[in-house]
Amino acid sequence: MHQATVFLLSALLPLSLSSERDPFAWLYGWSQRYHYNSLQADAKAGACPDACDCPPSFPVAMYCDGRGLTAVPAVPAHVKYLYLQNNAITAVPDSALVNATNLIWLMMHHNQLRSENIGEKAFSKLEQLERLYLQHNNMTSLPPNLPRTLRDLRADHNGIEKVTPAELEGMDNLTILYLHDNAVTDMSTSLKGLKSLTLLDISNNKLKKIPEALPEHLHQLYLESNSIESLPVDFLSHFTQLQYIRMAHNQLTDKGIPPNTFNVTGLVELDLSFNKLERIPPVSTTLRHLYLQANQIKEFTLGSFCSVVDVTNFSRLQTLRLDGNEIGRQDIPSESLLCLRQASSIEV
Ligand SMILES: *[C@@H]1O[C@H](CO)[C@@H](O)[C@H](O)[C@H]1NC(C)=O
Ligand SMILES: *[C@@H]1O[C@H](CO)[C@@H](O)[C@H](O)[C@H]1NC(C)=O
Ligand SMILES: *[C@@H]1O[C@H](CO)[C@@H](O)[C@H](O)[C@H]1NC(C)=O
Ligand SMILES: *[C@@H]1O[C@H](CO)[C@@H](O)[C@H](O)[C@H]1NC(C)=O
Ligand SMILES: *[C@@H]1O[C@H](CO)[C@@H](O)[C@H](O)[C@H]1NC(C)=O
Image (cartoon, rainbow, N blue to C red; front, side, top):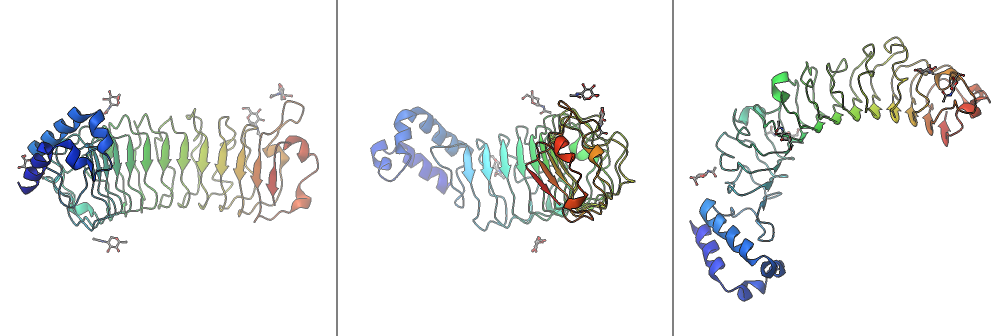
């Protein structure tokens, strides 16, 4: 009530008075009518909570970040961009966001959210939500009933152990999914049907195998620091747009990699460093960056890069790292220069 009164009063004040201390005053002249309307909306739907800032110049945003909050403040219905990061919020009950149905961005990273304190319907009414940041919290699973409208979901740096198909099903527009630095052992078929997903980061988890049903439009697949020993046959053949694969710090062996797995065009960067490979896997001549350092490679096989060498058949490789293996510069035959003619850096 108090807040609403203040807002009404300031709306009635002559503009010249308030312009003295408001750095955004120049905007009012330009959109005076808009400003006035937004203040009316505030008064109706509940005003800006004391702990937060709602800049008149950007009335659809509410900034509540870094203020030591332990609970979600009341959110006026017109707010579209809500910043709640860097607080100590532990819970999102079903009632917390009931009025916030216009939210497009919800930033809640760096809080202390625990899965058991997130209501079954806490996020389910946010039918416009596109971006949800939940990284650096204390969740052990993704919240239930997330809006299907999400495009960018970040839940890295939590204690998530499992992702189930129901949690992500129908998120047709999800483009970015961050799950790195969790404790995921099982993804089941949860990624199936994420037809817009281009960036998937599940590094630093406890996966023993490649997740099933990886979406076919991926551009970037990050799986480093897991416990993956082998790859499925034809693992990469479904992807038409995959450019970056990072699988450093896994348990990959030669036996675990079916022949020609990485000999696919389109790939730009392949990181297989810190694994247990004894041979250089065959790669496509179109690959640009190959990281194989800290494996157990005993032999330099030029055929892994070029099966034929002539004017048109050569490798486009620019970076090749082989340091920390069981070979030295003397093991690289001189004819390699023809094949690896574009390599600007070869480290052994
Ligand atoms: C939601 O809006 C209703 C009606 O304006 C109000 O009574 C209620 O306190 C609001 N709840 C929250 C959590 O903002
Ligand atoms: C959340 O995790 C952090 C870091 O692991 C820890 O310090 C904190 O006590 C946890 N908070 C809760 C509410 O569990
Ligand atoms: C995905 O985006 C399109 C276009 O913006 C929209 O029409 C559609 O409803 C969205 N899908 C979901 C599941 O939200
Ligand atoms: C990669 O595959 C192509 C055909 O798809 C083949 O001609 C080439 O020899 C293969 N490269 C290697 C290094 O095995
Ligand atoms: C590479 O070598 C093969 C076999 O000699 C030849 O058919 C092909 O046209 C050459 N060029 C490219 C770009 O593959």
